[in-house]
Image (cartoon, rainbow, N blue to C red; front, side):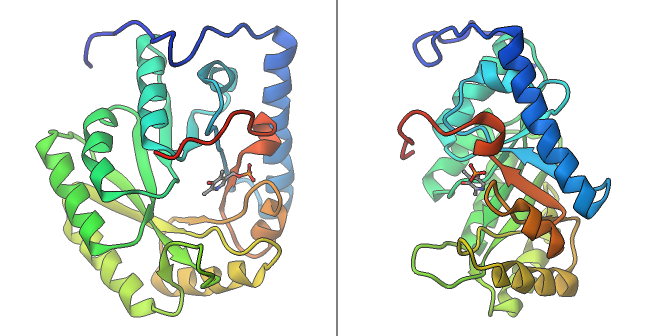
Length: 248
Ligand SMILES: *Cc1c(COP(=O)(O)O)cnc(C)c1O
């Protein structure tokens, strides 16, 4: 472990939370977990999505929950160093869109806390990630989920769900890398269109994996009914996102 550095107050100004506020966050999380498991059973995983949220809020959920989803590379790295500066153990899954020029930063700064990247959809990114982990001397494997575009709307990223051959070939490529572990599939889907979940479940049944990540605050229960085993829930746990979303 690198030696601790002081937290950067300019990035995350100190925040005081009352016991009530902390308890509220825990009960928000537990309520999502309960609802999820009532439908899908005890193996359903809830990934609280903490983008734009102050690390003190995330800290309130430790150790009840130890893994969180983040969308922006810079923000994720800032949070990883905040937790490191407090000697707190935490894990993150990266669920944002991954630009190739940010991979090296993730590989460098994610060494201790980055568990998985859920938004991989190209050969180029897989190769670059693997090389970058090697260059940064990772001593464990990084988990990878492939992001699948299940709606084929212009705005969605991921491998088109219609291209099952491409999905299989990227799974093979990941398996060839000795520092990457294929974990499963994730999709965002079109809001209100649960056939997206059906499409991904069919593919998941065909290609296999541990993680089938689909469903967010507005539709996690429906996603679980459709076979999801991991839901990514942000606003229902942490409240409405309250400062402008960064673009990095
Ligand atoms: C922000 C985000 C979420 C969480 O969204 P909520 O609607 O707040 O639950 C889930 N998945 C991805 C990929 C996200 O970017």
